[in-house]
Amino acid sequence: MKEMQRFAKVYQQQMNWEINEENYEKSRASLLNNYMLLTTEVAEVAEELRKGFNITNKNIQNGMNDEEAFRIAKEVIKQDLGKEFADCLAYICKIANFFEVDLEESFYSKMEEVKNRENKDIRLQKR
Image 1: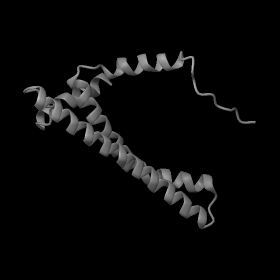
Image 2: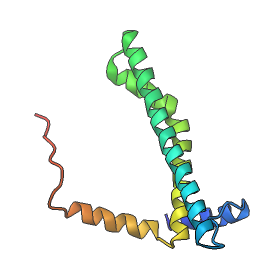
Image 3: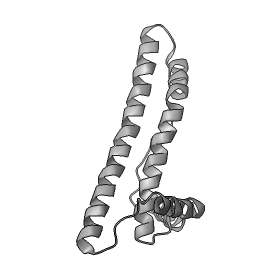
Image 4: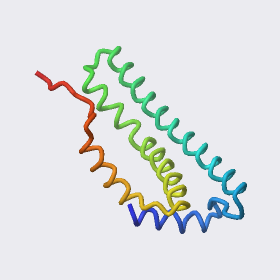
């Protein structure tokens, strides 16, 4: 993740896509714009999932069993889904870099926090 953040920082500088640091108002506007772009990319992940579910349901309606139908749908959307995840990661890295947040360190720290939570969701075991 550290390498991805370093790459993103250099890439965004080369493309002239950095968050504006000229003053508070420009930084604020730039951050809000990038956040809006991130949420747009997250919505595009949802669209790919929707496409996959529609492919699955169509194949089930045509007589295919649900597991096979879903396997095929996952293959169909895999590449485009990966592109949308990459877009999301690019915006996350950009915002994290602006605030000098180490995403790798933050990720592992947060996962440890979640693991040790008192109010974890309870999942029923399959019988």
